[in-house]
Structure formats: C-alpha cells, structure tokens
Length: 473
Image (cartoon, rainbow, N blue to C red; front, top):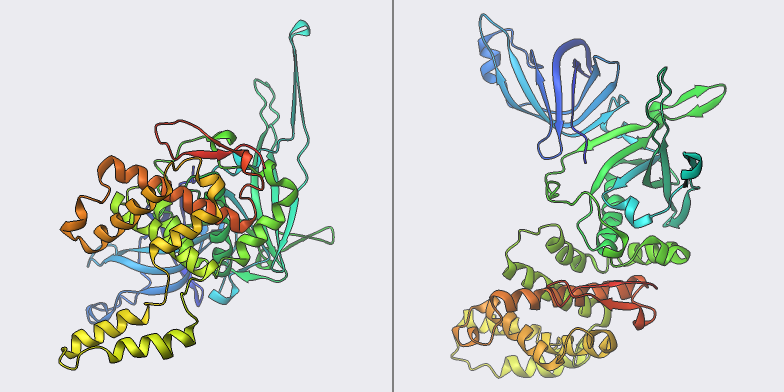
C-alpha cells in the first residue's frame, strides 16, 4: 500500500538558510504530511511581535533528513504553535506535497522532465512478466530466469505515455538463505518539455480514470516518482536523474477497503485484450476528456465514493447518461432557430397577462429548455444504438425505461403520486447497477473497445444480475 514514513531532520526557509530548526516530518496516506518543529519560523523576540503574528502560510520549506535526504515541502500552512517563557517554542505545519530527493527553491522550480506512477491493480491489469520458472523435481532444482520486459510506448498529445517495468533484484549475503526478484509496473509520463507537478496531476487523473473504468474498481496512485533537472547529476560525462519520491494527501481515496489483489478475469478487460490498440484507446480517452468531463465526474463520483447513498448514486448515473447522450448525440426536436423564433416566442406570448411575474419568469426558464429531448427519449435512443448488448441483461426495454424515468422524477421532486411507481430498496439497487453498466457501455464505446463484436461479452451470475466483463476483444 501507500508508504508511510517519518524523517528526523533540520528545516529552514529558502530565503533564510542560516535559520535552521530541528523537527520531525511524518506522512500517512490519510492524514498527509505534518512537520513538527522544535522552534518557530516566526519572530519571537518579544510578546508584542508574537501577538501580532498571523497563521503562517509558506510556499516552500526545505529540509535535510538525518540520513541525508534532501526534502522539499510545498504549499505549507501552520496548524499550531506554542510559545513558552521560559521554555521551548514549538510549531506544526501541514504540507500539500512532499518531494523527497531534491530541493526546490521556488514554486516555479518544481518541474519534472518525466513522472512514473504505479497505480493500484496496474500489475494485474498489464499482466506482463519477465519471469520464466522451471521446476525440476527429479533433480531437486528450481530454475528462475528473469529478463526485464521492454517498455511499451504510446504517444498522446505530444506526450509519451509508456508502460515501464522496474525490477528489484536479490541481495547477496554471506549466508544466502533466500533470494527474491520483484517486478513492478509503472506508467511513465514524458512530455516534450518539463512540466510543473500540478500539470502532471491532470494527466495522472485522466489515466487513473481510464484504469478505473477498464478495471471496474476504484484505482489510485500507490507510488509517484519524478525525474527533474534540479536533481541532474553528471557521471562519466553522462546525465543521470535520481528519482524524486512524491507524496500528497490520499484522503479522497478509500485506501483501507481496497482488496490486495484483483485477478485479470475480474476486470472488464485487460491490457492484453487491447495490446495492439492501446495507444488508440488511450488517445480516444484523452481526446474525449473535455467533451465528456461532466459525464466522467458523475460516473467516477460513484466509483470513488462507494459509501455514497444509493439514491445519490442513482441520480448521478442517470444524470451522467443524460449528459452523455446530449454531448455525443445532441437531442433537439427542432433546430435552435426554429424553436426560439417560432415555438418559444409563441409559448411565452401565450402566458396570461395576469400571471405573477416570478411565476412568469420560471415558466420562461422552463420553456427555454423545452426543445431538448426528454430523459425517456434519450434512453430510448441509447437502447436503439446498443440494443444487441442491452437485451442481454435487460429483459424488457420499456419497463426498464419507465421505471428509470419515474424513479428519477420521484427522487428529484418527491411527488407522493410517483412514489408507488419508483424503485426502492433492492429494486433501486439493481436498477442503479444496470444504469452503471449502461453508462460504462457508453464510455467504452467512445474509447473504441465496446465490444467490437458483441459476442465477446459474457455475463456472470454473482448475486447481481447486472455484472459482466469482457472476456476478449
């Protein structure tokens, strides 16, 4: 899981390198980075100055750990301070980002030429191994051969995205009792020129979403490392870039609930299923990111927040489906000009003169969107486009659409007349799961996987009638 650590060291501000303070830096994925200092960066020469001091916000704090690591804390703010006369002053800071292995003097210096991210379940999804193991029981011998796999490259928007493989080789000891080789898969991100860490975060987020969709589970970074010109070292006239470890707050991710392993057949599909078209699918995902951003937010909001109330999951998914249809297929009964100049004007003019002004304004606002397809119409069109696959897990299209529409109306308006027609409890759960798969099918179709041949979809009974995965593509 995500590494926790504690470093003892000395700490200072970039513009006051002579004023150094001892302290401890602690990091945990859920609480983030906290620096506890025996001392203060404030001027504590008098009580009057202490009382006038405000909570400190510092862009950068630099440090060196007791074992010699250069550390940069970025976006820091003071969480508490204590002053005693006589006695020692103490203070604590929270940091948004921690960079272990490099010193950055200014925020604009925090740039990386490449970043390497190891995501949860990435090893299982890629499933590319450099191991060859032979068991020879007759000779009481086991032969283990390992060759690190070559990187797998893709180019997206002038940025090289690669699958990279890191190997940790066995150590030699005087008395050799064990030997192990560990392989870990990273996604490498290398733009044409250095980018700030904040710019990388946007790319990392899109890759994370892509993996979460195709794996079918919430995915998040476990390890983030970067190479930067600030850390460049010349050895034998050759440039080397020791990797900087990067940490930030993971509290948005449900790290405690993630299972340790996930087998490839439990995923929607794996890298091997699309290995010859990996670049195409990733390009499609990035190209559609802006257009489908509201859809992504609604879908992944339910995936990354499993504790979300079922009713909220339902509303998010049904809204995501509506937004997807509107952004991909449009959906207007008349052209904009025809509706505005013929229908809309006529309907507004038909509002009686005696109607209250606030009600009249509300009616105008409602009529402004009257040309857009209804939820029912959008669902019907999606079923028509994906009928062959949807027929496999939805027995009656009309009943499903009717239930989805009336449940949405009830959950939105809480009209008691609709309550008896709306899904609830177990029915609402199954309806929500089917909507989730419906939206997944829409998104998969847009990146190019959907099931180039429908026969590749297999449904598995698992207590939920809406669960499926792609066995091959």
